[in-house]
Amino acid sequence: MEDEEQLSLVFAALADRTRREILVHLSRGSATVGEISAPLSISAPAVSQHLKVLERAGLVTRTVNAQWRTLSLQSQPLDAATAWIQEQRGTWNLRLDALEAHLEGMTAPSPP
Image (tube, rainbow, N blue to C red; front, top):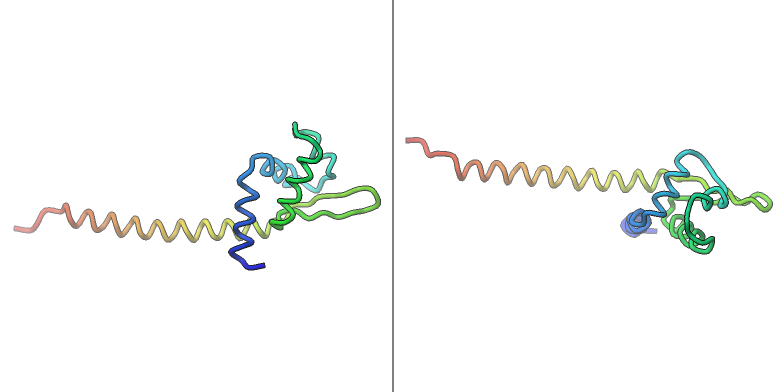
């Protein structure tokens, strides 16, 4: 999958509060679908849909052992999203610094 497309999937997955709650839960360690579902006030099919979005984004992996399905957080997609945000922040900081310098130059008094 292309990096830009993967990044879009990660940001789309993070856009939903319930999915972020699931990721917070998984940040404490792997959990079963039932353990993830318990604190959420939504239906089991809704939880399943949220998990599919998280899996498609690469944020969660699911392992099957007999009747148990264990979910684990995958941090690499979050690292990629963080790197993208930091890159954008750096670019905008440079642009804003240049704008500030330009504006200060425009308002500075001219030497006599």
